[in-house]
Length: 230
Picture 1: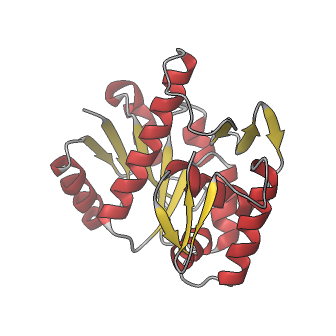
Picture 2: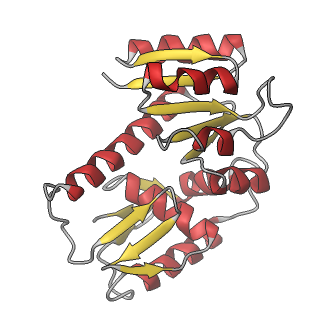
């Protein structure tokens, strides 16, 4: 059973998260302040932290750097702030994922499970037990440092390219429509359109594919969108 630490001062949302995740088989602990969450780290030993950005004991200060000083477990930020600059800032300050309110519990669960899958694959690779990739191109994402390596070489990516790569990488084999990719990259008030998604995808192909004109990793699903095949 995985341990989830929720740091959320909104009682209604906190209780809803706790009930839902408990029903899904997680062991859940909820606190209302960042400092209280830190004091609970050794006791709870969380596998993941769900973190609200606006906490009463920090007077609007982003809590990610403070939490990161005490633990390296994955942090999923839950916030009503959907401004792109704040999302970028929060991810650079140590968050592993960012989900905007309102959201569905099913989406939150999917994001949590995706993070857990990546952690498990990384752990197995470290022990030499991970399954071989279907492709002969070895791609590794380091979420903490927001770094991508292809066959051992660091590949420079823009913020949007990395976010798109992360979405594909954590959801291998899943077909994404262009609309779903727009929502994932920028949110509902996005200035990104379908053409921009295609451009970002083509840029990714040039950076990770051996033959970008005949992609084996990021496949086009005609009439729908894209699917990552590694």
